[in-house]
Length: 109
Image (cartoon, helix red, strand yellow):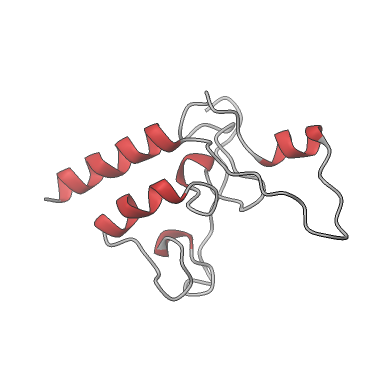
């Protein structure tokens, strides 16, 4: 069962990599410049787990960013990696795990 859960999680990451939704700016806020928007989110064709696979907005790997890609949520829930209180993976929940360090992989990885 654990192998199946891991397989589901890997498939979900591969299929959902970098599909962040871009919301319209709210009143009083200006839209980010195209260069800033590109810097915040990884391109769709990056290798999961690489340096380029990074969501600058949420400081987690883009391929694992449930806040940008809600399609990833079932895979995290299936593996028991879900914080229902805060609505994100337990492995990314800094409120429940204040000592948690999510580190961007080095360039060239």
